Structures are given as C-alpha cells and as structure tokens.
Image (cartoon, rainbow, N blue to C red; front, side, top):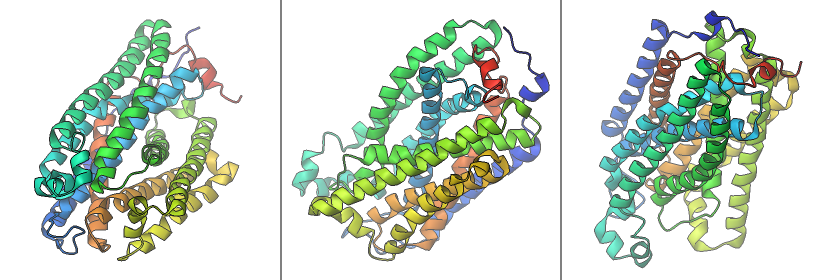
Length: 407
C-alpha cells in the first residue's frame, strides 16, 4: 500500500540564511587554524628535540571528529536495514546522506599527511632507527601505509555510503522491495568492515600519536564516543528541518524519544568502555600502558581528565533519565549540542597531550574552532545533498509502520 505524503514536507531547499551561517562556521574553522599556526607557541613539547606546530593537532581534532560522525551515520543506516526496524525509516534519509560526505572526509585525512611530521613521532627516521619498538612497528607506522589506508578505506566507505543512498533513492520512484532486501544484505558487510576499519583508523590517527602505548579497547572506545555524537547530530538535523517547516509529524515525539533512548544508552556505553579501559590499565600497572594516563594527570591536563566523566557522562545521563526530556525535541536538542561539545573536548584530550606537556587553553579554543569549521562544512554538504531527494524514503515498505510508531 502506497503511503501518501505531503510534498511540501519532504522537498527541502537550503535557504540563504542557513547557507551563509554554515559558510561563516567554515571561516571560523579556518581562522582558528590560522590562530593555532601563528598565534600559539611551540614550547613545552613532549619529545626532546621534537617539534610540533599546534595547527596540526587542532586540525586532527576536527578531522577525526567529523570522520566519526560520518562513518557512524552509515552504521546507523546499516543497523536500521539489518534489523528491519520500522521506527527509524523517516530518520534514515538523513543518515544515508551522511555517507555522501565520506569523500570529503577522506580528503581531510589526506591533508594530514602534510602535517604528519609535526604530529607523529614515527615519521622521524632518526627516532625510529634508535627505537627498537618503533622499528618493529615500522611496517604499519609509515607514511606509505597511512596514505594507502586512507585511499583504500575512503574508497570503500564511499562505496558503501553511495550504494545505501542510491538504492534508497531509486526505491522512492520504483517502490521495489528488492532494494530493501539488497541493503539489508549490504548492511551486514558494512558493520563488519566498519568495526575493523574504524578500529584501524583510530589506531593510526590517534593511538599512534603515542606509538609506544597500546590498548586493545581503543577502537570500541572511539566508536562509543563517535556514535553518541552521531545520534546527537540526528536530533539537531531533525530539529532544524522541523523548525524550517519540513517533516511535520513524519518525525514525531515517538521517533525523537527513541533517539533520546539511544543517546542515553550510548552515554552509558561510553562511560562503561572508558572506565573499563582505565581500570584494567591502571590496575595492571604496566608502565607501557599507564603512561598514557600519567601524561594526562600532570601539566594542567589533570583537571580536564577529571572533568571528562562529569561533562560527557554524568550531565547527559542525568538529563536523559527523565522520559519527558527525551520526548521534547526543544530540550533534547540542547543536550545534543552539549554532547557534540564534549565529544570535541574528548578528542582534544586524546590528541594534544601526546605532543604537548602542558594544557593549552589557546590550543583548546583552536580545536573547538576547528570542529566548528568541519561541522559547517559537513552540514553544508549534507543539506545540499538533501535537496536532491525527498527527506524521507517514500518508497520504503516499512514507512506506514514508521508513521504509526507507538500508536
């Protein structure tokens, strides 16, 4: 049975006010990187005789932030398909469109190669030759592998994202259920590939900043924070579209409530994984592992280390416990913005102490500015692509069930 949907609710056009605001955010990001490059000192470096321009640390914070949201957006699409869930159908076009940003995200990662010498100790040949462990890790930790990884994974992620979106948009017109069946099969492949590839890219981009350190939980730790942020971004996108007069009751308080429940669940999951990683490393007290936390308990970093569980777990956890809060999009969007802020703060906490002994408030502001810039770029690309297809998958066979969710 074909579901009738008012066309004015699903035919989106980006207005000039929003476009100008997003361009302004991009300019803020560029200005922040300029400030990091020329306005911040290069003192208090972690490695003796080393050098590190703060601009690349700030850039890495922004690039990894938006990569995580992009890839976990495709993960959300995959979960919706593989489980056959009906509730996220009207939200799925947003997450499908996230996948079209992957080529841009891959280019952002390739730019990191220009600053790799300022970020990664393992790019210094003399350091590697003098270090037995780094020589052992050289087959993985080298620019050739890094470049190949970004190109291959970027192409694969882009292909997954493109196919999910293409099949869904094609189904809008032909209403053929075979597209749903195909995407359900493809989803299983993406989930497995995503688990392996995102773990690898987390190790290469973030963990290898401190190449002597290792944690077998690091990949899932990065995933937990990224997915928490992606879920929050869905709330923000839905809020924006509804305030612009789109979607209407196609995304109602029941759908928002389910997003809120997922946000609460992954807030707890992030805390669980983060505490488990810390507890196991600290309790085992192996010097090769504990020094990661020791770096973050001196030089002013200890205050941010102690604050993270409060701002990233306790605050959203307490705010999301109340059922009415999760059903009120006007309230939930404020929590979502807070979660994005704490995600950016956490990535800054992961990146900066690897190269800088002391906490830098200027570096923190530059990193937040970098995140603002990539959010502006991401939103501009996604919203422009949302113009090219209906805002919901009008041909999905589960659409009617979705529209009557919890009714």
